[in-house]
Length: 134
View: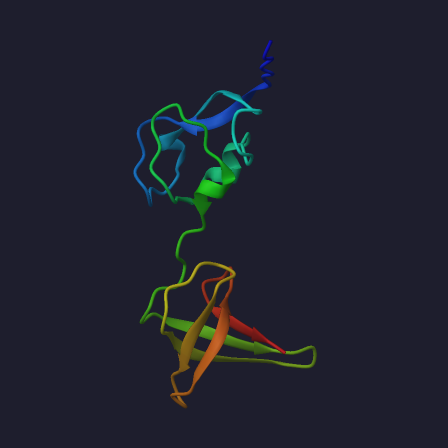
């Protein structure tokens, strides 16, 4: 005789049908009951973990939001002027650069130094700039 175990929890679910690339705001999220044993993991139970993220896939209303379905929004866009910070333990240098790629916080993108026209690989920072740490 098969046995089915359930662990019903209060989780974050879609308040309406959501298309891929939908920014998640309180208006499109609600709370609902979800089976913690039914999914592949990553069930979100705190609204703050989903708010401000971008949905990678489309989902139907009432479907639980899973962490693997989420992405950070793009914070640096190709062609955007950004502050490039070069830092080591002894000093910090700041200059301007142009982003050659789109990037999310933590992504490594190509930037071009505005003065020297040299291209570098830098990491997108939380402040909307990019950084290289030595």
